[in-house]
Image (cartoon, rainbow, N blue to C red):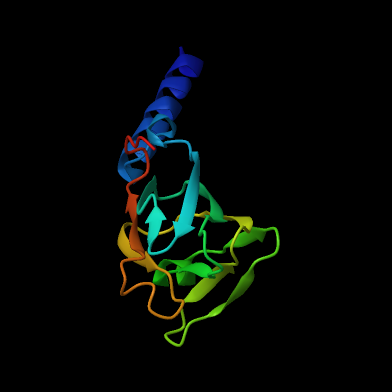
Length: 151
C-alpha cells in the first residue's frame, strides 16, 4: 500500500509541475523543415510572401531567373536575428542600413537555411539600385509554433 501511495504522490507531483509550467510534452509541436523556391526577376520575387512557424528550419532555394544580365539579392532586417547558412557561392554583405544581403547574378542558384526566430511580419527586398522601388519586395510572415501553414 505504501509503495502504491508513493507512486501516486510522485505522479501527482509530476502532473502539478507540468501544469505549473503550462506545457506538457504532448503540447510541444515538432519543428518543421519548410522549403521555398524563390525566383528573382525584374522587379519581383515569386513567391513574395513566405510564411513559416517560429522554430521551423527554413530552406530558401534562390534563383536569379532574370532574362537580362541583372544581379538581384534578398535582404531583410529579419536576417539580423537568425544564423543564415548558405550553400553554393553567392555574394554576401551588408546594406548601408546594416541588413545582410545575399546576391546572385543572372542564371545563378543558391540555397540559404536558417531556424526561424521571433514572430510577426518582416519585409524583404532587393537592395540592388532601384529594384525595391520598382516593386521587388516581399515579406516573411512568422507565426506561432504549431500553426497550420500550407506552402
